[in-house]
Length: 102
Image (cartoon, rainbow, N blue to C red; front, side):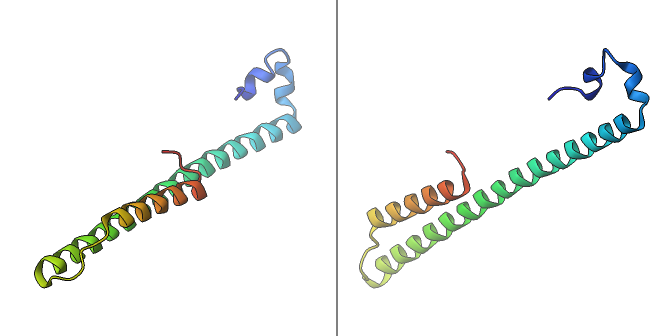
């Protein structure tokens, strides 16, 4: 991004004009809003990633519980292949929907 003052380097006298000052103030305000927007966007992606990780951990805990029940009571063993495929498709879908690139 160009520095605002560099634009008026050859015409310094224009900086004293009220309209130019108003324009420079407006540009500064827009730059601040852009920085805030970028911060919010990054923060949102962090929250999305955190939510994804929590869901994966929850899925792993459920599988561990199933395995414990299998060991203790002789229930049907968990289908690890299907579970891994489901977790992988969940992660990839969330990444695609939220434009997160792994």
